[in-house]
Image 1 (cartoon, rainbow, N blue to C red):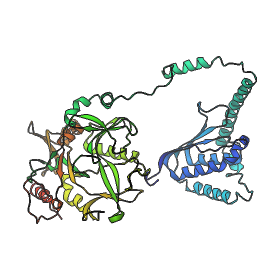
Image 2: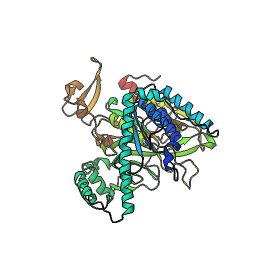
Image 3: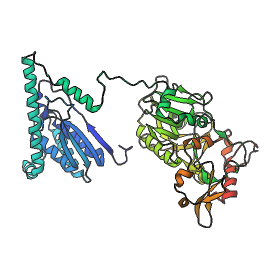
Image 4: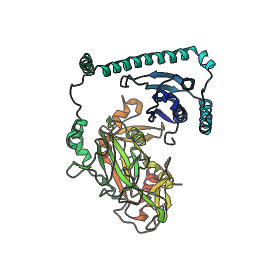
Length: 518
């Protein structure tokens, strides 16, 4: 529940148990189960959310009263029997749509009744009704609806039972219309008349070609390794700081289990990583990842740490850096910030509690890795926001290190030791984003035409100025942290000419943007 913030959008309750030998008493035997399922729905379904519950006969005052209270808690309810439900049994479904606010009073009433039923279960005392018959009859619309529903479903059930009885008595009887109905259904639904076959997804190259026809045009961009910051003079790298964002990285290099690459999800655990040298797909076998069908993301595996010192455990987690396809949704042309917002929702939807431990591991690794999306920072936030957020942590081995804290809703918070920053350009290569001191607003300078325009002067400024996935991916820059003192706030050690330090960024921002560091 804590992961949903305001409750779930939809709850489905399919509770049941064997009533063999007591089929005629199924409604009475199941009534507390119905009660508990509605209590849970009122507790966890968000306002405007929906609830579906399987029920059987609805003849007793208790059952009808329960349906009435659901009717008072949702804007619409329906008692329906799907065509796929066997017509000879009493199964039906209560569908409740658009939960109303302020249902706490009814929820507390039902909880009190449930407690009384539990406490009186051994005393041969039963609860016969939740709402008085007088109140039920006063609402003529509701009362007539329940009566009509019972009569209609009951009549159809009687017809089906008589049909079964007739077939039992005379085994030579045959339903002559069965084939005719089947053919009409297949024609209407445009389905082939044959045994269902599961589609062969093919090898990853064939799969990605069918999934994303533009993939061949992107391979030149996505099969290149990131460029590295190798000089303390940062202006050639970052002509405009407004163009750039960054994310912290858990790995300096992509090797072994510590991968950082493009991943392809074909559904379930059938996940492949892109090997950039031959530009081919390789199955992910070292780390168990689950991704939906039709997913292409840029991500890394991060060794997240929980606890400090000797009790510290390692939990491998997939961190999404950027996205191209999310479960079949093409987000390639969206601006970087919008792509990352979609990735956040995508990761949140996929994230599951830890299922268990690997048989060969005692460090808390999940059977299937959890997923989260990176937080995106502006380049100008590198000192006053990002570095100030880092905390010193004790490690199981080695000296204390600066760690990046990851807050969890359910589990304890974790952290990881960053091994660098990856800079992502959100502006197209031909543009530089700058701020006008006169108008105090951003404009975009085209380096090819030497023309500057404000957002309102574009026909569609996002489409014309914001980098697509492959443009961001191609221009990415890696600042690798190879020395601990690279990220010291003040440099006292001797500096290497081919290494970039934290103080270099401070000097760059102070010199070109007048940014003071507090």
